[in-house]
Amino acid sequence: MHGTSKALKSEDRVMAHRLRAVVERLTLPDEMLLGEASLSASGFKDLIEGLAREIDETVLPRRYALFSGERKVATMIASNRRLLSLVIEGRKVETEAGTEATPEAVANTYARALRALSARSELLVLRLMGRASNVSTGSDACSARHLTEFSETPYFKNRLKAFLKTVHPVSQGWIFHAGDSEPVAHAPDPELFKCLTALEQKIRAEHAARNGHRQLDRPSPNLAAFPISTDVQALVVSDGRDLIVAALPVSSVTSAMAHWKTVYGRQKASQAC
Image (cartoon, rainbow, N blue to C red; front, side):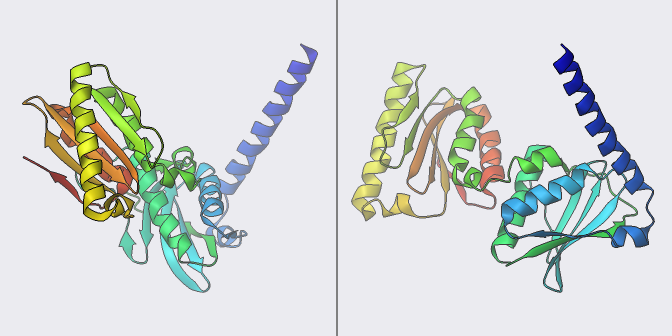
């Protein structure tokens, strides 16, 4: 018990020190804010984690900028421990039209834009530019916690799994085929699963006959919807050599497609009749 008490007191001291530092920072005039050390990021993970730390310590509205050399390549506004807006090379970064701007979707969109910027920049430097005025409290905002969930680049290599995780609760069955590995399936309805299996095999056979699997090997993801019955549609989703065939109620197809656009950005989806 004595050891536990000491640990709790130590945690309290750390938290108190952190809060005191935040309060002191809030009282700094603009000229002192501008004199604070800037943060350098040599890669995407460093950039997201450094930016997230700044956001998490920002309560009053602040303007930040990212520089590549002497060139300002992005500006952003943070307030109340959230990233409220992001403009990269003059273009405001926004979630896809028709997609619900949840904090997760906004963080996903911001992280993808920052990842692309980081990929084409040798070194990015984050600088605090001062206080922000006339701050809009729109829906395109995310917390530091949501942003750091996208700091690891492997997430972007597992987008199909992220999509499957979302549609699974509303699906009536699915088959997930990752490259040459054995397929994984969720099959509560045997008859419906037979239909999905036949569709999955037909699609892969057609791709193999047409271009020796090159169609599935292409880098761009693809989504299409096919009717199974009056109440159920099959979603066929490919990403590289990975493939999902899922059965969804017709009422859930539109929201699933919207989520696919959230995960993959501006990609092409088709709906067959």
